[in-house]
Length: 101
Image (cartoon, rainbow, N blue to C red; front, side, top):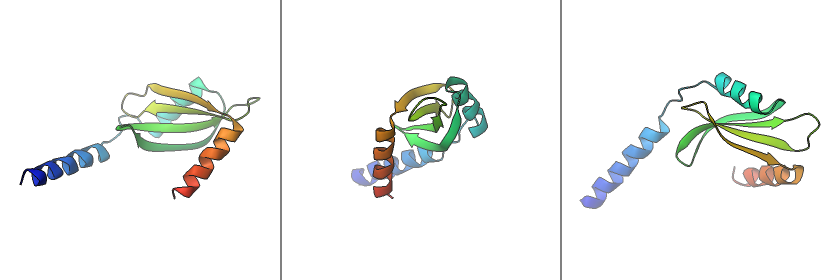
């Protein structure tokens, strides 16, 4: 019986995290990201990463090769990560994502 209780608890916790509603909108997060990296958004998504809801933006910045990836916390609107991907790293990431779909 204790295993059943642990399993049910894990399912309830996972459901609570999955059903969390962002406190800021995609549009608000987009403005935050573009204020950090002025460019054109190539892709955007709401995702769960390390147990947190984040908005992830891939931004192409003029006169800079590759993509700047910015993660915005969907609950606070604060930037939690900025990373620059070279064209080679970007291609490798797209290939990896295609394999997982």
